[in-house]
Amino acid sequence: MQRPPQPLGRGKYPPISFDFEATVMTICLNSHGQLSANLVRNDYIPPKDVNETEAELTGAPEGTRQLFAGSNVGALLCSDAQAGDKIVKVPVLGGLLVLRNISEESEYDIIGQGLLFSDHSLPLYPSRPPAGGELKEIEAYDESKYASCCKLEVEPIDYMVLERQDRGINGSRVEEKRLERLATKIYGKVKLIK
Image 1 (tube, rainbow, N blue to C red):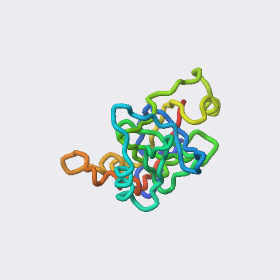
Image 2: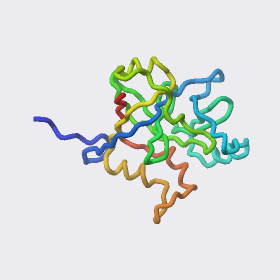
Image 3: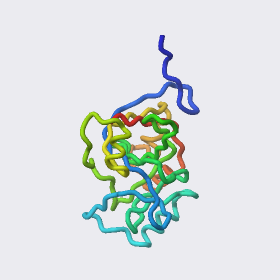
Image 4: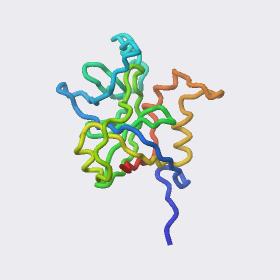
């Protein structure tokens, strides 16, 4: 007899899950020792100037990490983010999740969240290796980015926080609350299936 799913974090409810396909990127260190990733520049939006970037950083929670794309800041990440972690954009939620592999398996703990600047994005779907490969082979195909089928597992309360934390009563986004994502802890896991 199989045991029912157990709570993942502080709650008492079994996790809910949903599957999605996304680009998974590995955070690395650039030659200046800064967190970096192969983010794509959006040519239709003018790049943020230094003052705009400084304004975003001023309102960010203490310890927020900058993620560079070349010489520009392309995203802000939670304070726990480090080189070797993965980032994935969850389509329904819009924000980034910062993931850390704790075991040898393709299961990652959610360690925090991130926010892409409007002038940067993750590549839609990078080229895929041949079908049927194991996750280790896929990562070796392109260490820094790959497309994957993902399974997000979180407790119901954490899913509600992910979905609603920067929305007002009427459901519209409240931009001033957006930066709070960087300090909000989410208990859950993401399994990379392909």
